[in-house]
Image 1: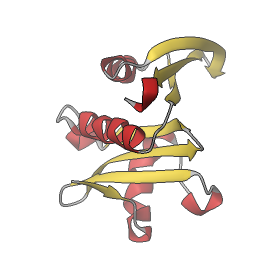
Image 2: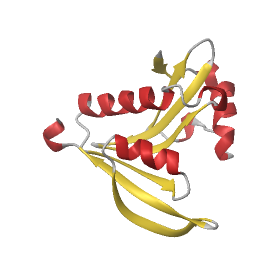
Image 3: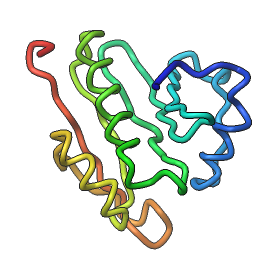
Image 4: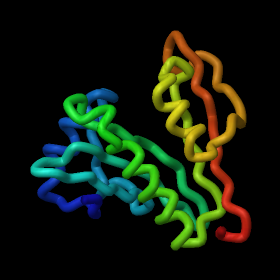
Length: 137
């Protein structure tokens, strides 16, 4: 089940996001949206910023014990549906060029290469990608 983040989820969400050496503070940015995929515990998280008619995807991550179980697909489908329902014109993201699994996931959901940021992740480049929606599909 995918549902909106609740304050009581903070510890579980930050445990999963620790993979990125990040913690979220959803109160710090009024544009942040966070949804979680829950079984008995939170097993996946998607965090994005909805800024007027566009979305910037900040994080999508699945607990290491639940990878390759379709959780990332569920989160991506939720994001795409959310975008369509809310008349979003595009979703943008950046991903480490070495994160082949994530790049393949984004390509599966029709994200396209836009540009590259040299050495954005210390020793590797960031790939910028976009998914456009024509006439709000």
